[in-house]
Amino acid sequence: MPRNAQQTRGRILDAANRLFYGEGIRSVSVDAVADKAGITKRTLYYHFKSKDELITAYLESRDQPNLVLLAKWFDEADGSLADKVEAIFTNLARSARHPKWKGCGFLRTAAELADMPGHPAVKAGAAHKKKFEAWLTERIEAEGLGNAPLLARQIVLLMDGAHSIMLIHRDPEYIEAAGRAAAALINSTVIS
Image (tube, rainbow, N blue to C red; front, side, top):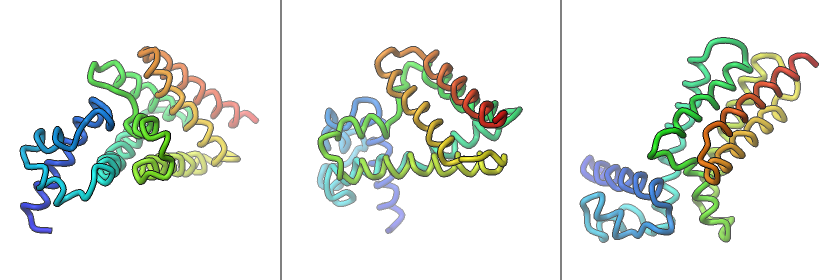
């Protein structure tokens, strides 16, 4: 892809990220994304064949940055595995206090597409969640804890539950409580 085409695609994805995350995928039109990117609708459709393809690319563009951020929060935390996992939740709660925070873009998109379970964007969201779960499983296994896949899945459930309840209550203390529960799960496994 020529440099100009890559730059244009990047501008489109940047605009889609801001609009889809800020307003939701169903309420944002392709015209709005093109306008925000400073291009024509025809140019947008040159890069993305459909709105569905653009929504999927939006989520795929958030995958690695989100995983890198979660790993950074884990790696920068001092203490035990339980402390490091709780630090992910603590940092997430801090992020949730920002007025522009709208929750997990992957979960929000899946909720908007609940009537379309085979949608490529739903699959992209599922792949992202599985990558985080696999990453967490590896961290737990590195500590020598038994049944790491189950423990990682339980922590992911706590995290996604915290994201969901935040959309209702807008209270980051729910995320902090989920972090303490995740730490308690790990500590109970260590003791067993």
